[in-house]
Image (cartoon, rainbow, N blue to C red; front, side, top):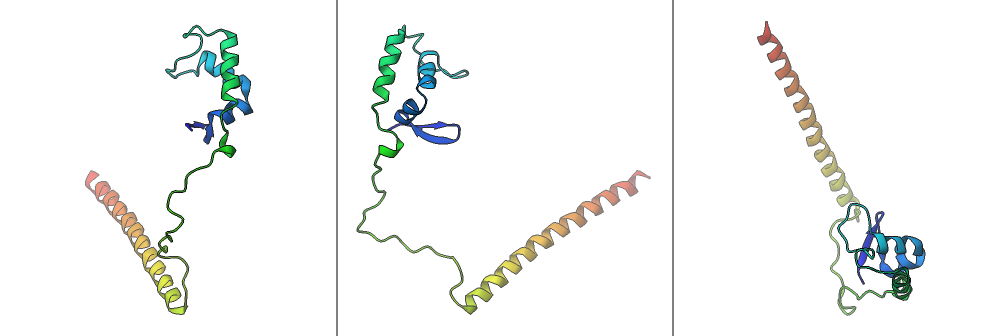
Amino acid sequence: MIIFRTEGVDEYLGSVANRDPWRFLHRTRFGVAGTNMPVGVNLDWTPVDGRDILAYVQTLPSESEIVREPTQSPLTTPAPLLGGPATNLWTGILTGLGMFAGMGVYAALFIGGFILVGVIVVTLLRKRK
């Protein structure tokens, strides 16, 4: 049931061992560069031990075989989500005005910051003379 993060994808041990058994054997015997993990070479594993471990891990369930428990009871109904698309003309108008006002604030802050930087640069240049 341990989830491994491999190349940006969540995987289970059984699916890794079934998809790429050679990589699994190599990593269990020699480890992964830059990590501090117990490896088969340090544990005095023989190649037969590595093969036996691979055979066992291949019997473990893969991602498609694992059934996850539901996060909540099926008898409860989830709370409705707030927001979403406008349901009538007035909420559409209010949404548009809110977006317009919000973008106006961002535009004013951007322009004000640009003007402030310009004033500071001009003031510093005038003091140099």
